[in-house]
Image (tube, rainbow over all chains, first blue to last red):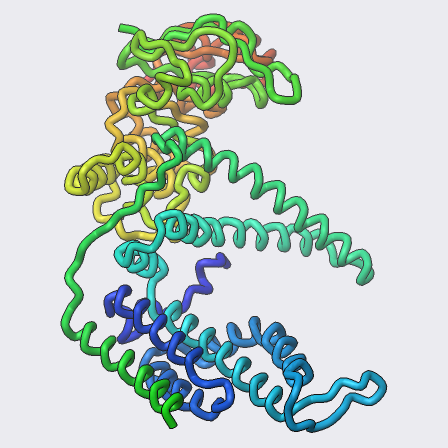
Length: 258
Length: 251
């Protein structure tokens, strides 16, 4: 098995796969900004954004599992931040006090926590949906065409390229370890894991030197070349993108006005 | 005309270990020369010097132009280096971006870049691979794309570091056939002496950073004692010819 086997089929089979990457990136940014702009004290309006995302996810062929796994990765961080917010809000209607510590949670703090957790999850969902329906190289093309800084685009390209090389190297190392038996205790297991991580880091460092040599050998002088190809956006893509953006803007506008 | 001229080149690794010692070598334009030797002999280090990636004490000239930090960038346009591991050579996610990288660094116009990329890929038998993702390619395809990355630059000299390493026999044979078709001057560092025998008219044996001997491939690769003394073996095809008492000419 290679790490590249983990790329979702939806990147090529989704009805959104052929949509212009620029339109998708702009839509993602607009929906993210829309979600963030929903007032903190009205988290119920985030369901509107969630509804929009459900409407986009259902036909997208991106599986619920694909989204859930990625939401779970970010979950612990969001939970830690959200759990602390009810106690940090300061003045407000007190809800309960933690015995022994004297920390008091407030209703306003709880609402802020729900709002921030909801917004964070929605933002990740949008990013996952974008990644799940777009070939990564198209995303890079889109960013480049939208004039994102070339350093960012090239770095993303190289990270994507070597994610699979390093991932496969890690899988081979894990296989080699497994073939020679399992660690005998948790301490031993930790020691082996740390040694493996160290060895992988050294290999990555050595590889980075060789890559730098390969770049210089082909004329790299510190200026990163980026291809700015100009393709016309199809009107269907524009119309679809506009509909998504307008929906998100309307939800946010109504949430702020009412 | 001399494509590469090396005179008394010496180089030490940063930890002080000697890598090259008074290496002198001349390669004529259009010639294919094999650099052979055991592990750690300095073969790859020598190739890096020919591209200006390393600079030791001594003289390296490419087409009569002295290789210095000032001239290195210009000379690299004529000298293409293909690394042993294609995952080092191919650092972009898509084949097109990788093959186009050198041309874009030279700020060539986009239509020329597209034309040269298509030509280079066709030359290595990978027409239409432009949009393929590098990490989806087989090792043989990656090796071919690695060659295409330097062919696109229209180099006069190819420096190849272990070009047949990790290839299965069929892929290796195809790869050797491909290298045979390339008209450029070739300097090939390799342990694969069968391949060296197929491609190179001349061979240089390197050990412990020194040139032990340079000579005609058919003469040098049949010297069993010499090769074994330096951790190498007579290629099987030549051994067979030697035992049959046949003419030792190399196909």
